[in-house]
Image (cartoon, rainbow, N blue to C red; front, side, top):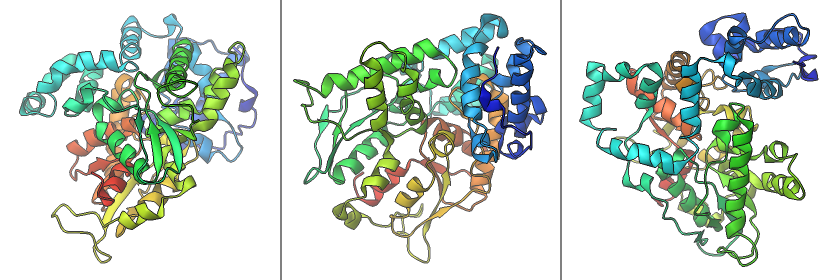
Length: 447
């Protein structure tokens, strides 16, 4: 097993340790970026063999990349862990039960149709007194820690979550400034469909025409972040084909090119921006198509801050209301605690853009958590495969956000949102969690 040259700059200074989520809850050197880099060097030198114990220390990594932001030597730990993940999928490195559970997740989460079929019978359970009763008597614990973690993340399931009936083209309000494609996501379209509706409303009100391929599937983020390379490439090819099927010569959405392909979940954006690298070995023109597609991908907040909110939209913005129904004022603003999703802040380098958009809302104050760059414990499927560590991180994060004194929390990634909502419900000071697009849409009177 060779060690990428990016390990060489590591001087084991320890600046990564306070930012590392796994080190925070496990407290062991082997479960820190510094320790894992040392392990990689030992593996390359033949001083150590990759076995189940060694692999477990890499599996404890959330892939949050906070250490990349913190490293003064420029070590690209993100590149190192991405190169290591596929090796961890060797069958001898995990138990049969672990492999079966991961296989279930990878055959379920990226496929909205399958996920809907499983969740439809649960509509009478999630978010109802029946679920509350089950929790009071401890029934979910009988499922085992991983399935119990899945059950606790389930939100109430609304009818809108079980259909994709949006038009292919949603025209801009007023004069069209730009034309974009929009990713629906696989988990978000089921668990938080209001985010998509708010995003569409905000885009259209800003003179942006929105194109939504009706047969789009998963972008591949879930599998990408776990080193499932072939499945990730297949999902990426399928998603690009779905956009090509509606935008192009004779296609349903017409021949006008897209100015951008937008995402409302940072984990998806991180992966889609890497399509050029993930599909670099494709034959013929496919690699060039992947590079061109990746170059158009943008987080919706990144995009709106770059192109600017229209003057007409900005005139629509009004103060949000407090829980008691009164409008925010300069003396009594609505206070929001912004949660930095790791794949937004550390993966894409986007921190100021969402904050700048939120500050456009009159009498809204953005409050900062004391440890904004530390992961909440969601990390793709981490809170399902490592439920105890993820729960400890979830409690730390929600306590940190609550301590700001905010009226509500804001998150721009569906995994983080579900994780935060779960642990706020169990905390002493629960906060609602909203997406920035939902707050902009409310302020503009669009929802």
